[in-house]
Length: 161
Image (cartoon, rainbow, N blue to C red; front, side, top):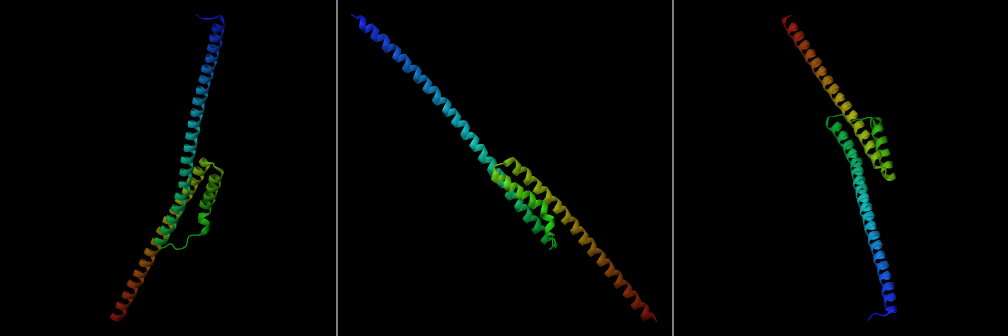
């Protein structure tokens, strides 16, 4: 047998249970939202770190390429490269490093590419210098050969007399 007070108490408890269930659902939804936001933040940080690593690699690669250009010039016997030749390269590397420190990794990429292009121009100039040096050596050899031939002709001419 259910008493009148019991029915009222059951209704109160049922409402309280419904409120607890609603609060639980809200908390679960909030937890899901927070987990989703956390996942997105983790992904953003991961992407930013990957971009940062790539940007730093571009700077270091450009610096290695500069050294390779210098080594190439030395191997080709072009011991003197005017320091001004690297002004554009140094400018862009400095800008890339500044952008890196500021967290502007797209700008790092752009300046690293500009630095690389300036190195390509230097390499072209080195190749031109090498060709000019080779041509100069060939002309010198031809001139020496002509002088030698002239001396031999003169010696034969003197022998005949």
